[in-house]
Length: 288
Image (cartoon, rainbow, N blue to C red; front, side, top):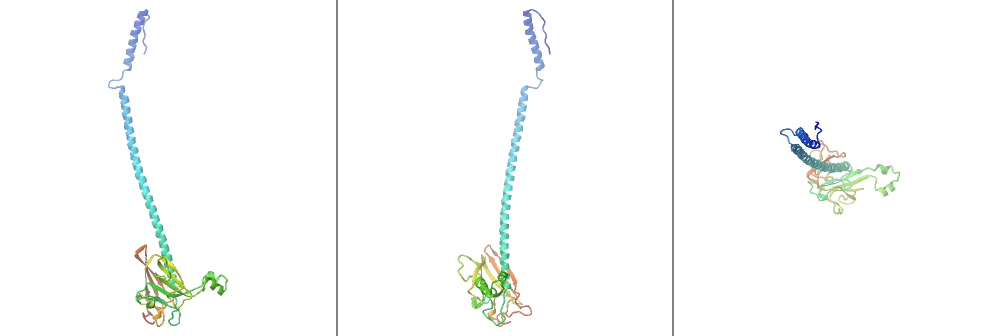
């Protein structure tokens, strides 16, 4: 907008200038006056309120996100700890089961090797469990002692050494071996407890002593045996009281361990050298 004044005297020019300035100022003021119902402070007030509100919503959202993140992190941590504990438990269980399978396989191998001499009853060849002569009651048995055929190891056979050298270095390479399974060791076990295996070769007339003894499985708390005579299961066996010594057709071994005392495990082993059958059972307490 242009504001003009005439060329008059200095006084008039100055007055006109003042008047003209006032007029131009009024025009500019009218031109720049805000719209009705609007005040400049409204701009700043409205913008500040919106900014504060937007800032408030952002803080709430951040707090919610942080809370959810904390819950999620805690959940993941607990899941990880639980998974780690489960994996550790599974590993211990697998190790325990593997040890149990190895132990039971050892028992099967031992009992399957049971053998008797074809001659009359003799203490150099026997199968005794719960025998009165060994302190048992003749009814139940918590130990088992028998003779077994031990075959020479392939490594010994293939060593190229003569019999005298093999016997001197490794002991008798094969023959009749005395085997005993019991919770009561013959020697001093120290603080160890469990199922002990005692072996002696060649077998002698002392089925309750001699030989080498080792802890076969630690933590065995109870042990009992049953024997199948061809007709039923019985709790004891003693070939020294039989007219014709005969082996049971099968053996059951029941045992519990300290880590699972409420669980009684059972191993059933067939005795290959036995001739006892349903048609030809063994007469308990006497001969064939």
